[in-house]
Length: 239
Image 1 (tube, rainbow, N blue to C red):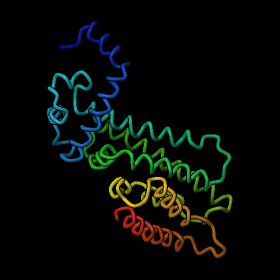
Image 2 (cartoon, one colour; image 1 turned 120 degrees about the vertical axis):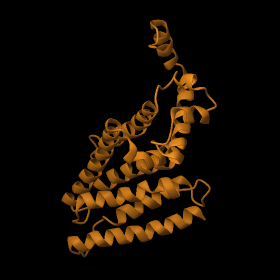
Image 3 (tube, rainbow, N blue to C red; image 1 turned 135 degrees about the vertical axis):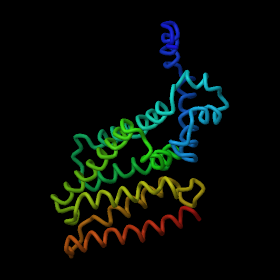
Image 4 (cartoon, helix red, strand yellow; image 1 turned 45 degrees about the horizontal axis):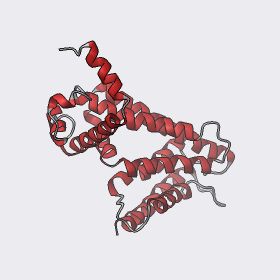
């Protein structure tokens, strides 16, 4: 049965309340935990309601289907974060290194604070309905394109080595993305210290040096150097 006009008006009014926003955030976090544990295909809307100790009818007040929940997770996380990345360096006249540092810092913060929401989206990516997956992929492509653009700027200015900019962008994003899985807030280093170290790892692989090796060798060196540093940082963070 479709909601009545009065019900629609009540829902629109409630959507503006701080309490409703808080409940919605808690719902999305719990739903992400269920998706992460069970996968998207194996999750029912009842499973999400149960995780929140709600009846299915109460969950309908916020979302009608699990697809609606997943879409909200993608829009809240991917779309918003892609826009944040773009806005962070829009019209920016700083050096490519400074721009890349800004982008990577945002990504690290997003990944370490995102918790189950980030891991759930990573896990269920291949299970997403086509229309939702398109939103997810588009947001990721926007972020990747932004990193490629900044790396090209650094290469053109002589600040960065001459490498394959797409490969380099994927490499530095790989460092960032894995923090969702190994970062521990109980580790020895603060998140700020960890951000500084990770960004340094990424930039050190790109910054120009006196002797510039061939592009093919440079790409290989970047990947190996970053991996060695990343392994060391994992050990430090988890100790």
